[in-house]
Length: 409
Length: 183
Image 1 (cartoon, chains in turn yellow, brown):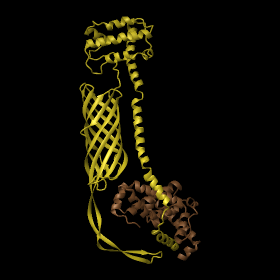
Image 2: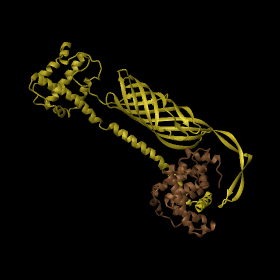
Image 3: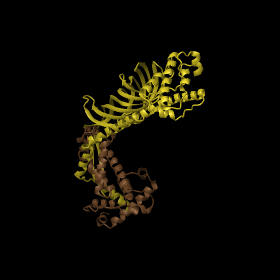
Image 4: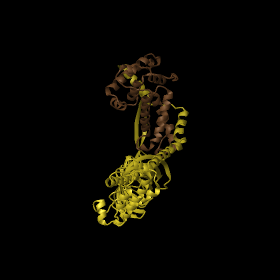
């Protein structure tokens, strides 16, 4: 066992100060990885960003047309079914096959669709009864024409539609045919046409994000300048899918305190004894001890961040003059964090980072025809630290707000 | 060895290549020796050293200039070596005797020109598990508890590996005249 202990000492002493120069090829390989291919590494962010944009683009475009036409077909199918019911009820002999209206209407021209859409006001829209009657007449007459060309066996259509298309119908007659007295079109479902909007936001920017300097554990508030552009697609009356590109930038200065040594003032000497392999004193040296003093240093960090939000917006209320809703989703951040010299603001170094932030944004907008102006609040929390850089990072939930201009496309 | 002062460290954390080069030339010999101790051959040691210094540069923002840069680089180098052993040597640490009796593939290029080289050769010939625990405990001064945490093994396993490593080294060294002369 004693011999084993000697092995311990032997290795400890032999390898305590063991040094060997590595081949030069190692350093050149390191340089190649770190400095020669720096541009290629940076490119990865563009690949990520491009890929994400492509996915969003495809997501926004995919299935739009088919979804729209299906919505309309469903609505139109209801109209035809209604005609079928009337045919069945009043003529008592003719029955429409549920699948036939789809076949017939699938190839109908755009003019019919636009007329149909014009006639269908959005839900809750007040409609004059005369206008409503006229709209119904136009639709039913057109439906007759369309149905006639495809349904040869629907022979009694004129009789039933005549009752509805009578322009001299009174309110009482309308009530009799339509049921309860409401300012809505009761027979027809509301077709939803998918529309898009573009939002340009920023201006006053966001504020009060808290950035923690991990060196000093200090928390500083910063003023972020924030602006961007977003494209949204209304999936239905309530939900919209939103994406775009956003820029956030800010600059923050941090004070750092640390102990430094003044090598011009020696306060004493420290004795350092080294031992040889058999634990005998080999050498004794005296190292100078220098004066310690408090030093202050200031660093400035500049953050430029481009981000891609992928979010859903839920519209809580959509009145004619204003709407309000909540926007929530993920924001993918591509950041560039630069360390600046405090006085000259010359750039020391720049680090590229990637992060992901969850965002919740209540919005209020006032409509001015196709345009809307509005204000939003913004609450953000980092899932992957958005400023994934040791000295500064977003410390907790940040809050802010801004203004936006929205254009319906 | 080149002196690394605060200014150089500050430039290094700011990403300046010249400062990194100075740090490399100051610390690479010491770190290379660590890599040699942990790996089976020089080629592997060079791979670990390269990987370690790439990490040193990439993680420079995590370096606190209040700490000793040498200790920080050493920590990174040892961790890199342990990862390399896990990934490339299929290191399995158990109490089973058989697992550690396997022959390590030793590169014969290590020249036996001095006692240090002889000791290094013996160390490199040890099975990976023995060598790792022996290095961590004897030369890098980790406790068995710390070794257990680093390697994900029990403290008892660490102790038994260490004892077996010493025993094997002793057996190998007994055959070498230089070692006998030394003791």
